[in-house]
Amino acid sequence: SLQQPIDTMMAASPPYSPHDDRRRRALLSWRLDVTSSTAVILLLFCWLSDMNQQSKSISAKDDSLLLSKSFLENGFCLAPHLFNNTHFSCASFDFLCAFVCILAIFVGNVIPDNRSNNNEKQKKKSMILPGSAIYFLAHSYGHYTFSSVYSGNGNEQQFTISETETISTNTIKDTIILAFILSIGPLEAASTLIKSNKLSPPNAYIMAAAMLSTLVGIYHTFLQSNPSYALLYINISIILSMSLPKLLFVGCTSQQDVILRSNEVILPKLMSGLFVMAVIVCEPFFCDVFFARIGGHFLFDFSLALDVVMAVVMEGSKRSGGVDNDDVVEVEEMKKVKAS
Image (cartoon, rainbow, N blue to C red):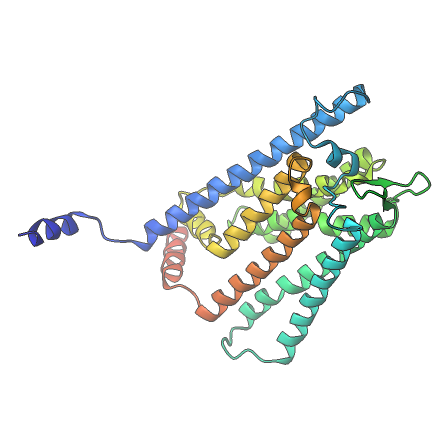
């Protein structure tokens, strides 16, 4: 009969193991870090190459440029055929996102959540929205600063900076805003090193402070005269400072590293993160090809908002679902191994 071969195949096949699923997710997380780091390093190389090319020859540079010409001229992928002022549209959207985050914080504090009595989990969840609100406010301020000096040229095909206007980024206020936005990467790197037990919390945050000081110093040394490149510099700095430490210090084979990486691979958050990464790569490379026609830099701000929504959803599902039993077992086994 057919039942006997089927029973034989089922008996020969290995049983499903959640540990194997964790290892697959950890390997996926590691490969994504490799991909994002490689893509951003390539972007950095192309940017530096184009800047060097522009410094040598101002004319006849279109064919030799690796990035889109309009992106290099403006520092953003503007879409004037969709928005009367792309920067002002982005500033308004970011301000709306900040308002929604603040409103969500207020609603969460006023309306009690009875799904969990774990105060530590509630504290961790609540940090996403305040951080996002401050980030969106800072991002909105940056776009508003640019919107005041950009103007359409009548046929709405490009934006140009008025010769009588300048963008100042050397004030204390602007430096603080820049430092706050750049701090996302070093703080995430510190968190990764703490979770992986590579550094103690004090040493990790000292390292983050040193990284942040270096990033701000590099900007003021080399890009102060051309603040249009602030966005590209911020994106490259944040992604590299987030992905490289995890890639260098967190593997995908040891039990502790598998737990750390597998807990981060949740489909909605994974997809939103890939969307952000795709936008970051497409904006400078394909602005003149197609990206400006589908929204330009506004898509970047939209992808950030979507990523925040997915992060809140992920934290909410973790908090409502409780701690996975496999996590408890593996963490206890790790403690036994360390104690022995």
